[in-house]
Image 1 (cartoon, rainbow, N blue to C red):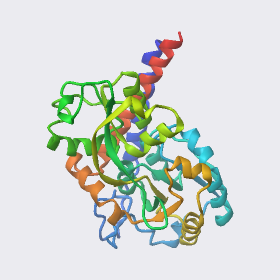
Image 2 (cartoon, rainbow, N blue to C red; image 1 turned 60 degrees about the vertical axis):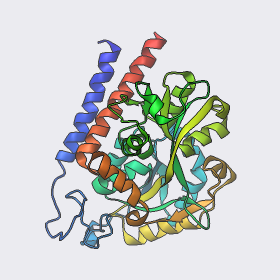
Image 3 (spheres, rainbow, N blue to C red; image 1 turned 45 degrees about the horizontal axis):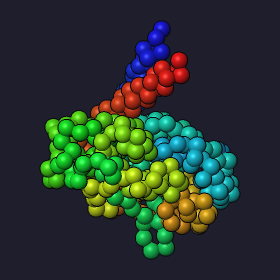
Length: 350
């Protein structure tokens, strides 16, 4: 079997598995008085926009091992090492064994929490909404400092030696988005760019790179003319020496968005949730984490209802909100992109 065909078949199988997974979990909480925008598996009777804990105490989960992960915005292995001092602290405070689970896509991370295999996770800004609505995630923290949360901007980067000076110059150009679920990498551009004279899918066809760092590297190498990326990822890559800031020009910068959220599964035992929060808010970042997270020195408390309001508004305007159909489309696109890149890599190695 040709290797490209094999990878595309694997991608299709992954999407079918995710679709079957959602189709198989449709039993609603019959005594739920209000769900809001949440999936039928969850209830939101207090109106805080996130899943309520189970009404039946026998359904609380208190696992002996906590599974933790961080958003696959860049190489997952990098963050497993950077976050190890924190996961060690989490283990000490909770009295649990903590395992870091490397995920390769936003859809896989969301599916893992929905299925019960993931207990605590960092979700990128856009996927946070899908995790809340479809996986019962309860965001409670972001990176920050003593006074405020850490945010980021959607920026559009081009090579400094390119002719592009403003967004409207990109009509007909090769413009990279990251993934369908990404706030700064896809949803925000679709809502914000038209006011600047550039309409995605009309003035250009978005080219999905898969991740922010891949978009940055693509502009650097000339594979893309421009890319919509999160400012924190871009400057982190600059500090690491992965790219030179002098090679780029920023031609657009948005308002501030909240950075990745940290969330726990809604059905964890309340005593365990209290210990998880204690671990997060008592921890102070190591020098390596300070460097990786742009000076944030701690986890800052937030609520999804308040701090994700602008993100929800953009998602609703862009694609009608954080729905199952949107997640399925995201999963399909991520699988296709991964298969395509794997096939290209294999071809180069032949």
